Amino acid sequence: MANNDLLAVASQSGPTVSFFSVGTYRELGTVQLPNEPHELCFDPARRLLYCSITYRSGYYHRNTGRAHEIAVIDPDEQRVTDVIDLSPEHAPHGLVLDRDHDILYTSVEATDSAPGALLALDPGSRKVLRRIPVAAPGPHWFTVTPDGRQAYTTNKEAPYVSVVDLDSGRLLERIPVPGSEGVDISPDGRYVFAATPKADFSGTAPAGAGIAVIDTADHRVVRTLPAEGVTMPVHTTSGGLLLTGELRMTDEAAAAGGLGSQADGVLNVYSRAGSGERLLGQVEVGRFPLTITSSADGSLAYVSNVVSSTVTVVDLAALRPVATLSIPRREEPGAHGLAFVPAA
Image (tube, rainbow, N blue to C red; front, side, top):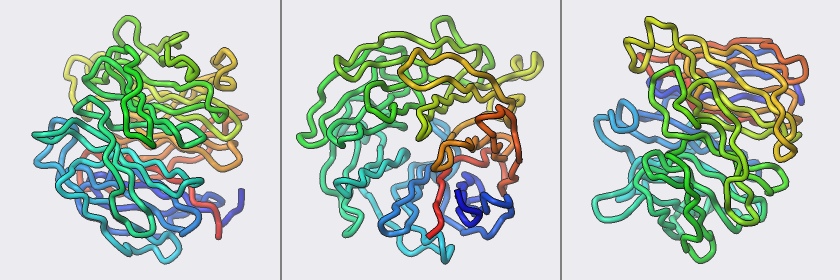
């Protein structure tokens, strides 16, 4: 990890992407974006960032209208170079780049005439290559297998994780879970980890909630890692650690409910994904952890906290926070998408 590597952070209500030095944690600049940026994805071949513009304001099921753009950002010059219009598709959210096949995937919500889907885009021409339905209205997060052949989408209301063939566009499986949120895959592609059930803004997870561990060989849940609090983000590091983020509430806040009532959350750090996932420790982070990424070498985790609008930087060997970054916002929600940008 070099001192001139960058961390990019999207703020929903900024609406901005801010850039920080990972060596000094100093803010280096901010790019203004259309309302309302959500997730980020870095394209190393072109040295570009893609940012999904999901809603005009608000959040899932509580918004003033769905957006339909992906902003293209030059992280070195810190400027928007293009905006991809996905109309008539809307509410793009998750972003995954298949580097081997040079395809950018994004999830979109259902329209009046079609279910939610993954869109495959050509990053060169920035055109949609195909639409891959996932048989659910609200896919937000998804993960792609290392060979680029299949994707697993978590679906907020639908009682299953969808498995799709990315070449044929065919739905392969519905893996039963009681709704789902964040998702990621182990570096070797053997296991998928999905946060269940669909999250609300309460502090206590319902019975049976946690991280569903899915065997990709036969598409079944083989175990569930229990959660004390509502869980949204899930991330696996390059070294194979499994990271999850849990909400926490005070008693008073739990009674009030709603966005903004959360207390400081928790980052859970598990041993190597797929090896039994032993809980190594917990680290306190900001209010409402929503997205997690990590440095290229897997030594540091970055957790965006959407209510406090901060990013907590965590040393994964020492299991302690080493910095807190403040992210600009107009109102709640704040810090959301993250991307680690290696030095040129």
